[in-house]
Image 1 (cartoon, rainbow, N blue to C red):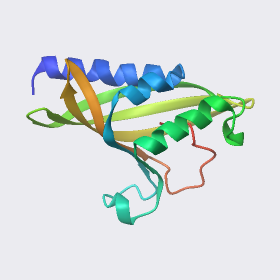
Image 2 (image 1 turned 90 degrees about the vertical axis):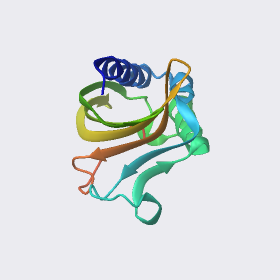
Image 3 (image 1 turned 90 degrees about the horizontal axis):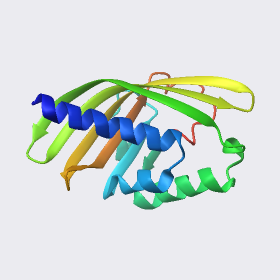
Image 4 (image 1 turned 30 degrees about the horizontal axis):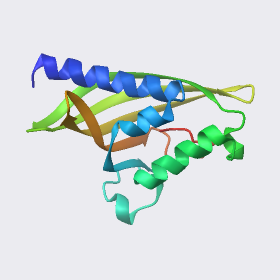
Length: 158
């Protein structure tokens, strides 16, 4: 692993968090490979996402629908739109194989919605593919620390 790659990956992950916090959903969707998967498993140890229950296991079409609901006001749980701030840290490159890079990071997400603050902490694993001087997200798995507990609306956690 090169320090240059770590810097490039870090900048990419920070950009993704910034796009989400500023509700730039179309730009966020553009960060993805069309075949990419966005997964939030309920079981924090799960790796068989197709055969276990997940809060989400989104393909391209579902990511677009989720983003549309967030900005349209159609989702009661996200009206008015929550204000969020993500802090992504502890970025570690687990594997680099040609143009594919597997990354693990920690994320703290603060949300202010309906006069209330919520805090979600997670370990996130990304599979990134090099593309045109940057990356595309092939897979993003968010492992919420409290995923198997009662959780308030998480429809905006992307």
